[in-house]
Image (cartoon, rainbow, N blue to C red; front, side, top):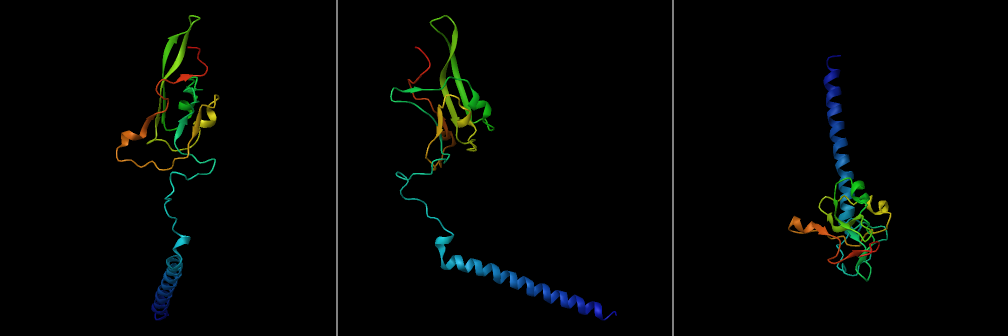
Length: 164
């Protein structure tokens, strides 16, 4: 009986070596198939970046939509900023006195922090005015992180709802 125990250990030892080699061969077979046909594993970076059309529900950079008169639909309700889980949106406004004597919020800066955005898409459907959308850009690499903070409202833009 004492002699059987070491023989069983030797048998387990060789079986584990065989299973390890078999597993290695299976893995190398998969790697070899990718080596022979690299197009199945490698997708080339697009050279036609300027004309490339992404699919419709692609989430690129956030945009504040402006029309041809440089007007936007944002009514400074701040819903998009409250819905953003990362705090990537800052809506800065001024209070101005309207013609009727009541104070009204007017958009000063719509700041988008791309560096913290997770592209979850909660901001766009939460906007009741449809003032936001995602664009088609997919390349966001920069050397200076401050370039990822963007002011989305154009200089001199006004709200469609305001009577200024």
